[in-house]
Length: 216
Image (cartoon, rainbow, N blue to C red; front, side):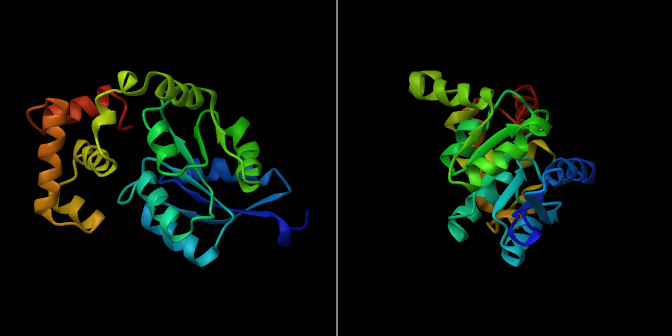
C-alpha cells in the first residue's frame, strides 16, 4: 500500500515517550501512517480538524480535556471517525462508559504492542476491537445489569470527569475553564459526587479515586 493510500492515524497521549513507542509500533506496518500527535485533548481535536485522520488513538487520561471528552466531541463533530481508547489500568473501569460514548476500540497500553495494529485495521473497516478484559467487563454489564454496577457507574460522564480532575488536584476554577462551565456548576457536580459516593470531602474523594484506579 502506498503512503498516499495508507491508513492515517492521530496519536493523543500526554507522555511523549508513550507516543514515540506507539508511533514506532504503528509505523512498523507499511499500511498505516501517523499523521499527527497531540499531548492533550484540545490539541487532539485541533489535529483531527486539521489532518482529518481515518483513526484516532486516544489516551483516556490527559490534562485539560480527557480521552472521554475527546471521544464525545468527536462523535458530535466527526461521527464517522473511529476512536480507540487506551488506558493504563487493566481493571477496565472505563470500558463500559467508553463504549456507551461511542468508542470503537478499547485496550490497555500494556496490550497495545500486540493489539494496536490489528485494532486499527479492524475499526477502519467498520468493526470494533476490545481487549479480552474489556469484553468481559461489557459482558458482565449486560448479564448483571444494575446488579453488577459499581458506585462509579452511578456517576454521569461529566461527574466522572470532575471527580478525576478534583482527585488530581485541579481547582474548581481550572475545571470550569477546561469544560467551559461556571465555577458554581463545578461545585454542584462536586457536591453530587460526594453524595452519590457517600464521601465527606475532597480528601476522601481523592482516596476513592486512587483505590478504584480512576487516576494514574
